[in-house]
Length: 330
Image (tube, rainbow, N blue to C red):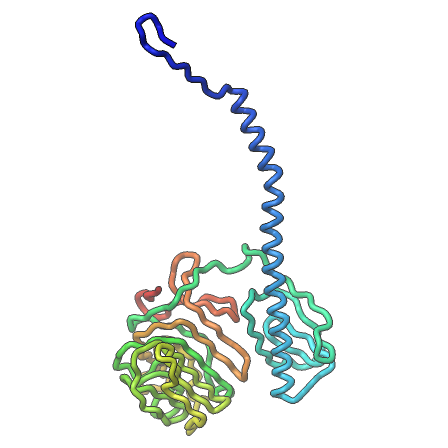
């Protein structure tokens, strides 16, 4: 269309208010229809995840009871399993330790009743996310030689022979005497780690396995109860140490009563009093067993305030740096 000057005119039309309102109403109707469907999908996913975790946990309990039956040669007719890992057989009797390991989410409350080796009833429940601790899992914590974790687990004359201590770690070159342990190294050592660059262990007054350590990531596994000690290099996938006989001499743990320390070595019987030798290392995870019962399961995490520390999945508890400075992490 041209005006009398010869210019072309264009007419541009937009949406009217009524048309915009109509579109908004249509979108609102679609949202109202779709929202329940989306929510149902989300709820269904949560229910399936809980069901999967529940199945894994019940299977883990059955395996734990079966292991207990095989190892202790008993097959009671009636048992109740509590969520803290305790087993009572028959109901009302003394508590028997039971290890329950599962890859799924653990329930927050309830119990499971066995009869004749089979689960008869279960009342386990799962908590919502608001009641669970908030943290971000890390690959590892790293000590610069000033930080350490006090596990709060006391090694003494009553339990030292039942202990299994597993730590997944990379140890850096250092002059520290040992990586983890308690006691006086010359009298009643409980050592897992290295002296300079030599792998050693110690129970009693002996240290052994003078094997050079390559500073690779390795899994140290001291199993006192089963008389074994292994060091597995996760890089080369070879056993650096694989012993079936431990040297146990002059335990004397009744004189120490000290906590097992991560990233260091605690000596309570030193003439000048308690002191620690700390170590530069990275820890990817650590488990402590007592008589096949998992008592600590540490993973490296950032808490909800961004502080690097260890979280124990058994107790549901945060363990913070007891030294100075702050952990490095990845």
